[in-house]
Length: 344
Image (cartoon, rainbow, N blue to C red; front, side):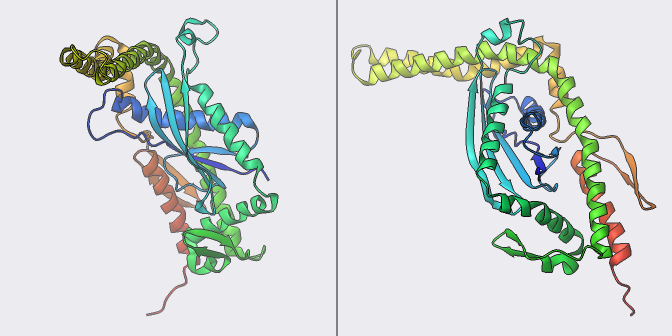
């Protein structure tokens, strides 16, 4: 079977202290945007079933694609990707594999690439690597994953009832057996899982809309940031070469002055990027939109009332709040029907 993929929102990797090429608001917005771009790239491969973006990794699917942003400065994008399956985080397909891509200035000058994201190629490369990892897996092992997914989902609600069907050792899960097809509790769990999948499916247009609304402002940021990043890289390279020359004694007489010049050059290179981003924030209306979109890592969702088998629950808060709330909604239904009454 084609396996379902969960792509949690990427880790924005925002440093605790200000860093010259990290704009926290942009990073938080990118964490959502990049997860959605990863979803699109995996869908284009046609190698998987449903690919869903989720606020965290508590969603259920056969494969999990975790991303961490190492750099995204307009010119260079570097991502750290870990892929594992439902058997546990130790069942890794890719482990902290780093991908990088450099955008050429010609990208923003060509009419053919106008209105597209300059980072898109890196996600297609990652998707190809994941498909390659998939092709190396044994078919009999892959065939077991949907059942393990089902049993891990079932254990969230009724571990006493379903725990015997899974064996866990060192956070790795192995399928022991499956319930009888006529088991009413099993049938209920399957129905509840479909409901949760539908709920997550309803979240996908939100991530798409977020990315679409972000497009014109983010494209403007990418185009503005690329020459700044390129100049900073050139300054750092010149500063490093100058320092190495001074250390090597080629200009011994001028070592003191040269070191001073190179130190200033490094400081200008490190500080220049942040100043330029601030200037972009002051000068461009797009920056205020990116600031607003990146205020929080989790997407805002309007309050909604959900119903399943006559039980209604009002969900409020951001994406992760409502995701957790919906899981509790299903848990409440399960407990009301399958937790036996205890006579005191």
